Length: 191
Image (cartoon, rainbow, N blue to C red; front, side, top):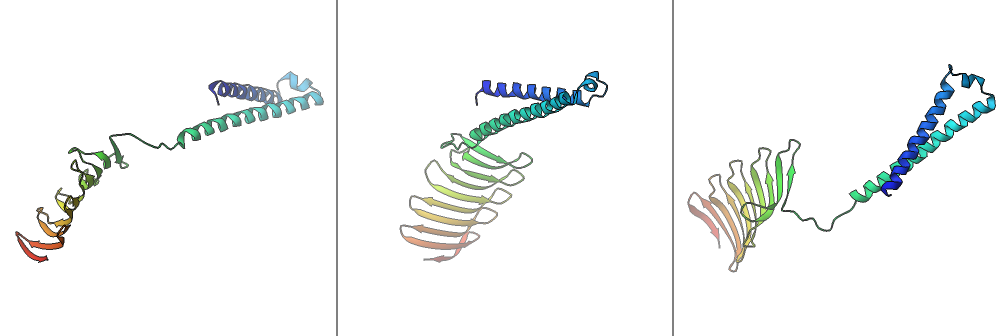
């Protein structure tokens, strides 16, 4: 609907509502001499005009509302094929950042998740070297889980609160391997 058509509907709504309301006011007014001097036919005509103008005002305003809703739906249900942005931030009810999808401070594109205190706790990214990784941290920002895929294979590492690897699993050109560490020493491995 064009702006001109919308304005016309608004004007018609106002006119019909005004006319309907004016005639209804005449009918309700007991002090008006006009109403007391009218014949039954004239009074009936005023009632019919009130109903007609009120109905026309309602019908025109309904057309206007339908046109607005159609216009709103047309603009809100459009799905874009591509959205271009450097990042998307998700916030909680208090406005605190809880997630970020974009390019991080070190140039890696990824998904960064934050705890309610604003500390980054999980990262899934692809670094500038093209290698994907998943890292999860404890409240002290120490990486406790790291999963990565590199040129020579993939690995999973579980780390302690000091950041030392305690369990390492790898799959590379030589096959799979598993290592368990205590303090600085390797206590078990296969193969």
